[in-house]
Image (cartoon, rainbow, N blue to C red):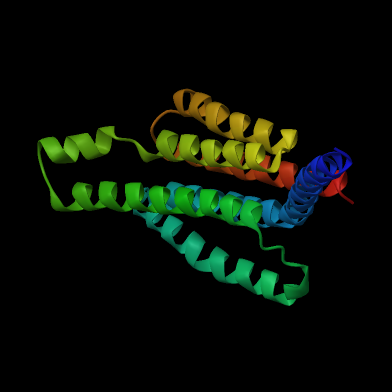
Length: 207
């Protein structure tokens, strides 16, 4: 009887240890993610304002192609930032799931953009009209907000959850307010500022 109780206590202690380890990992990953929210938020704000400025000056919406340069610039810089503090990296199921969420968002956002632009350039008539009607801005804003919100649930952080809702739903609201021209770049600037604010709050939470 006593041996059974000892085994039961050991099992409970093991579950408690696993739960505590996961919670510590979430806190550690969230703390480290603050600087990456700041980085990507600043980069997103910069590119959105750059595209808006060039589009305004030239009147040519083709400057939207600069968006493809953002991951080309951002991903190597982020990896460089990570390598500088290799010893601080945390690799576990939580970090892999969180990384997978943002990788999936990046893939879908790039795929939707590339296919829409491809159909717009190569086709006329109905397909072209469909491509124009399928406006990328609200779709990407919703995808972005969804990815951020899911990340917040994964990390169990209320700030990231709220930021995801604000980015997705707020971005959609701004879309209907600003219209379908270059002013839509303010939606991405808004999303970038939300990321920056999120990063600052997270860094303050875990300083």
